[in-house]
Length: 349
Image 1 (spheres, rainbow, N blue to C red):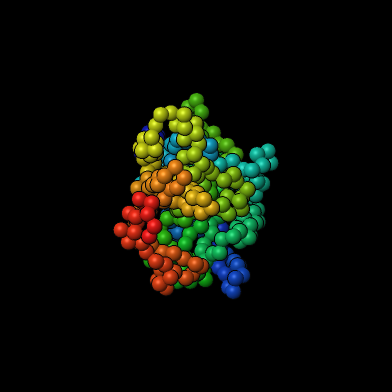
Image 2 (image 1 turned 90 degrees about the vertical axis):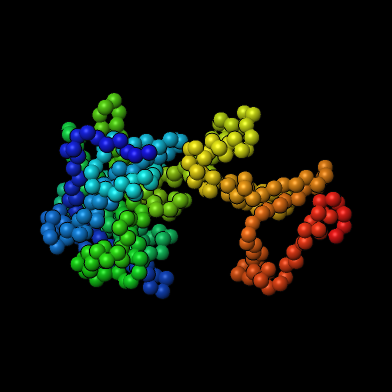
């Protein structure tokens, strides 16, 4: 489903400040190797045009992404559509999530959004970079901290964005001009890997407002807890929670087979079947699989009133003891089809 475009073409995004950090590690020690502070005037120059285009295109794409509010099932469209993003990437989704302390919030983001001069922006951006450096992430990447504004009709406000990129290969640049060359040559991917935009824009009774929530995007199926923790954001509802909640609320008491429930999930989002897991406990042995694999590859055979067999179909099999594969080492014996049939009939092998 595409985002509904606004008919007013006056929506405009401008970047006031950009602070760029080169994050790396040496011998398990993380550090900020390089830092550049770039103003709006710099970004408007020919020297930084590639970097400016890269940042604006990603910000516009992120603002246009479909949104999944926390504890809600359906996606919503952002009220402002900005031209100049990446339409293919806009099919992805972002989570809208509040801060853990809803009364106090997180002062750095609020301060950096409202700061009016270069010195205060640099101070708060540096604080964010240090907090990111303290997370469980082990980086060789660039971190962008941005202050930007959006003007759309009578609506006008400032925002903060935190973006991370991934080097496809090579080393971090030593100066901002080399960062530009890395963007040109594809060393830096054209889309950011993780992003936070604060505050969140929403529409109510035909008017546009902002609220004390963040819009979070990750180029991964499962949200990274460290990324939410570092800015004290609530962790979003993931596929497992959604599937369990939907089943308990609407389908547990209904006369609906598992096949029927899976058909419902397919209509909502086929990725739910791959991300949600089923746990199977047989005596003291526990295995787990995706809901999709459980449906397609696993059968539970009732041998008699007291015994059950678990049959798993597949084309590859491994039995791992740490890094050792017991099948490759010739330690695991396979049953023949005749032996398996004898087990089903209750005969000794």
